[in-house]
Image 1 (spheres, helix red, strand yellow):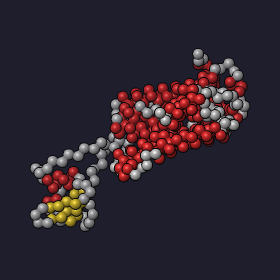
Image 2 (image 1 turned 180 degrees about the vertical axis):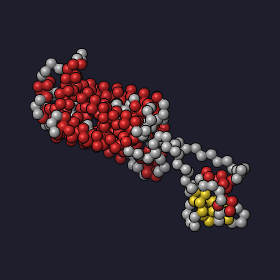
Image 3 (image 1 turned 90 degrees about the vertical axis):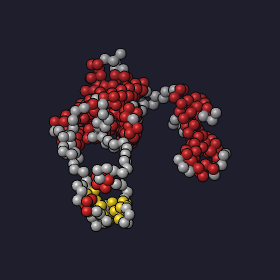
Length: 395
């Protein structure tokens, strides 16, 4: 059972340790210098601005007088859409015929009705950048939260106290999540007050972005031996996790916004940018990212050990890990060419020897097991469940 007073005390302790003294002013100053301009400066077109006039259509060649005087059409010596009058018809040559030019050529009664259907490209707004920056600046603080204490030998004292491991992890998470949420919320409020963005459902998943980022960071550094190791892991993984998940969520959202919003962390990041209209994507993004955050905190608390403690061995996870790797090593040389053939290159599949794929997959799996066994001096060797999962992929 969690005791809120102990969680708050641990959160306050982390903030005091990190933000005290002259060095502690660095993080608030950097946060203000980054988020302040992003919230107040004009970036592109803000809500309420007048719509820009449509671009002029550039035409060249044998331009009829009626077309040259049409609104929105500019005659140039060369380039743009080229018109060629061969006596019987007026040919139009160009990569695209803009609607204004088509209306001018067709007149009041067009001979052919053309309908162009396209999905509008909706890019995230500045609030995505605010959430991204507010989460990225916490990388150093998160790595120092657990890894720094282990390097200073103070984590042992904390683990020996009356606070449970869940209280320790949640307290550290609450400290830096609160800082990130406060920074993102103040910047968003400043952008709203300045008229740069409009309030909307994007405000719901915005706090979940730093919350999930901090939880992921704590999970990554839970076993780091010192501050250098923790900073190395967090600085490598956290920016990549934010970027890759955000891009993947945006791409999936082009097909269905609910599908993109369901991706943890990335869905909340893109939804915080006001990319998808309506409450459903924001609610789904908040739910999936919130559940992922809770799962990461629980795993971190369960696996928070003192330095040198034996690692926990989970047979189910080892079985899944071995199965996934074995399936990839076995099927990638076979499924890869098949997918390539389906994309329009069947010659590659026709020339592929039938035995090459299984042989390459078997050699890759054997090499992986041999490498893991050679590292048994520092890491535990593959368990029986891992061997079983790898062998099951061959079935």
